Picture 1 (spheres, rainbow, N blue to C red):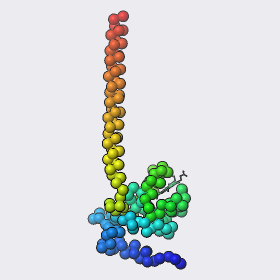
Picture 2: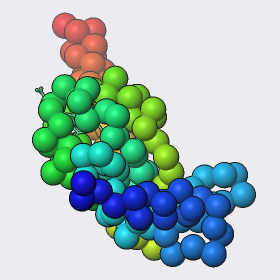
Picture 3: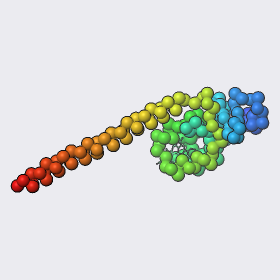
Picture 4: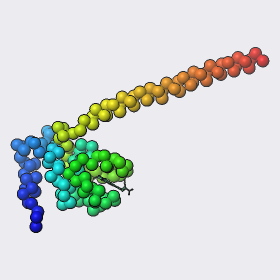
Length: 157
Ligand code: HEM
């Protein structure tokens, strides 16, 4: 009844129309980039897209299969569900399932500045590997010294 074939018409045209760059663009490797605005239009149970880690998924046919129920997915429809997806602590199986529904990437301009966070995490990892290396080294040196003293005492008695 109230369905708008208008929008469907638009989305089938967009893949062909290179002039519609604000919504969809394709790089030479054939990867599609969708704008946030475009993703937001797919927010109904008959047409559901999600963004997870800057990737766009069409999960319309997955709604009924989702072990966590379709409601939680519909709450996030047309939006970035990264946080809620991670909050649940989905299994690796669940992460692999994502690939089946992958349709493209979120446009660079619409991404949150997550890459900066990644750099930060990498840096802190580096410093923690430093300490994991340093602490055993110091401990080994202390044990070495103690062992020497022990052997010396042992010999003299
Ligand atoms: C397309 C994206 C998603 C896929 C492929 C997916 C897949 C799955 C799978 C396979 C499970 C079973 C448990 C596991 O293997 O981890 C699950 C459980 C669940 N998912 Fe998702 N999920 C998706 C998105 C979401 C989102 C966006 C939310 C939250 C808003 C969510 C909430 C839940 C909840 C609440 C459970 C139930 C956990 C439990 O009962 O232990 N899922 N999902």
